[in-house]
Image 1 (tube, helix red, strand yellow):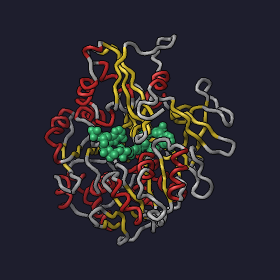
Image 2 (tube, helix red, strand yellow):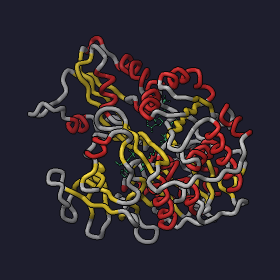
Image 3 (tube, protein in one colour):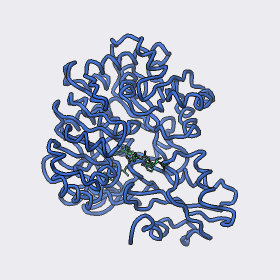
Image 4 (cartoon, protein in one colour):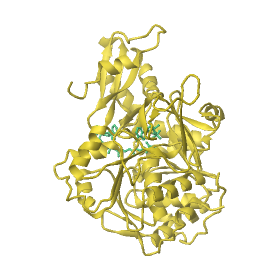
Length: 503
Ligand code: MCA
Ligand code: AMP
């Protein structure tokens, strides 16, 4: 069976065709990509990384990191990317749980993370910097570029991506070669990607969106990308005239609309803007179209499933909807109580089935079993299908906050706050935010005279990544409860809904 890498290159782009155009003007063509990923694949073998071994990586975005991802996949090992914002405390959990063989971090975090890797029994720790420096990059430079890509089964793991849970710690979603290849090859056709396309890539590459949806899809088409280190408005405005497509989270689009330089002339060569990872409001969809002449194509996905639905490329892209099930993907909407499909137009839980659906959670068979029903993956998202087949996401059954496209689970933050001795209890909620979509707010009950926002924030900073830390904390006497004594988060969300905006 073929490896994901081989399947992504089935269109056989010529070695001289560009793959990535970097901010300094350097062009990495498909031949160079093959050599870079081949060097990493050879090096992994030298470092004792075998098939099925986990390669955990916490590095800044770089083209070398993309090559390491592909080299890991080519070698039949498992790529495990981690957000560079995670604290050593968070990294410790991922390394221990995944039993990684190799951990790659930034040169400047090596000293802080070496003890963490040692404690997790990781055999090797190496470094890779965003400028291509570091021990792993140096050694790769000495390794041979030619590598015979390992043949694997379709069900072989290509990656593990950690995704938080409603209770307890994060779970590793086991993603196979087939999951990724089937999704990328289908998206290339559905979104009409061609070799002439240039994708504006400003997303992080530690998540499904920037790593798989963006990079795998352009590789399938033999297309190229303008590869930016992060979302920076000036750099985006400068790059847009040289691109044909962009993928982003809604915050990208609202920031563009707020910038007076963004207009039709700037996007004259663009053919497609794609949004996902968080809800794009119908108002933003309309504002963007009025300014640019482009109807954003909104799609819906998950770490566990890659992409599930999409608005059409040809045909009406309907604001406030995520379109239709993608080819090969089945979607059904079921009743939360009876688990039976609901009639057209009614709200229920979105369930997904198809070659895109992951193999389960790493070493958590019970958790895996509880999230599947009759072979369907139960998403935890609430949706509705209208009589024309368009799907809308209307809410979430799972207690999840999506801030700037990053997922945050309240239980993880509440657990840290509740450990503060003066705190009796806390409720962490997502409140509408003009830039991030939702922002984290903590409502805390306890000995108010002994607590302060600064004190709570400074304690949270010791263990939680910055993006998870609350943007506001409110100290209260009591949290509202219903007759079952359950904290009423809906009432709190209502009470604080205008915290970041005007009524
Ligand atoms: C950064 N900060 C954030 C976020 N990002 N806080 C809350 N939410 C965030 N998303 C914090 C920083 O720690 C910093 O804190 C301050 O905000 C400003 O940081 P900065 O780096 O300047 O922020 P930014 O560059 O403006 O980043 C915002 C962003 C970025 C562009 C929205 O977060 C981003 O690129 N998000 C995309 C995430 C993504 O790829 N999601 C896909 C997941 P301080 O105050 O200390 O300075 S995959 C997925 O969801 C599924 C599968 C799907 O369907 O795609
Ligand atoms: P993640 O856990 O990072 O994989 O995020 C997946 C979740 O993001 C989904 O379960 C949805 O709740 C949400 N999501 C992704 N795309 C969209 C979208 N277009 N509209 C609304 N929610 C979305």
